[in-house]
Image 1 (cartoon, rainbow, N blue to C red):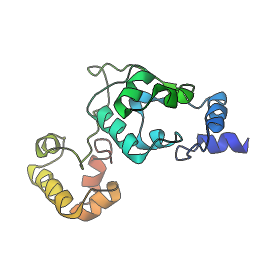
Image 2: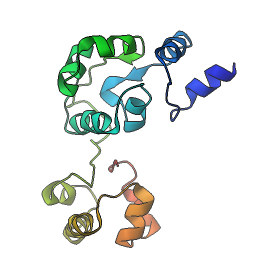
Image 3: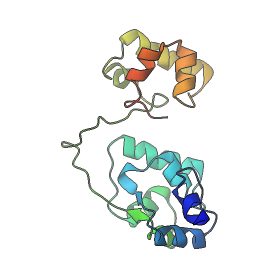
Image 4: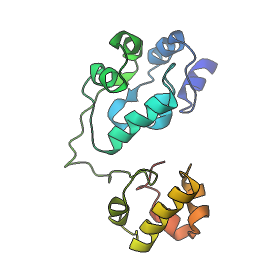
Length: 164
């Protein structure tokens, strides 16, 4: 039971292929086309750079159809990823029918993309770009709020539109 509880923690990183198999046996799955950075980093041997690349593609609307797609993007042999197949689900989402707006990474988005976010002023979009160039990427929403001096209401409005 303790192991199942550990596997349910979305921040727990599987330490071995054996843990991947046990997690799959208790019903843990990762929906590849809705996976977060934390989801990717749960997989043993997946680096932060690889997780970031996969996440960036997802944020741009790319959907993966099979494990071969992921292997091609990461430029790794398919055999390296096959042990993860028991956890990975490849669900298709019609971009025209998604209820939730696509999340934008303010560390990567252009000024134009940021300015198009509902509730985002042109001044704030410009300040985001200027601040990330000067001080580096935002680590999370709390740092984003602090560095840009946003009030709670402004920050709340970006909860479901920004992804770090």
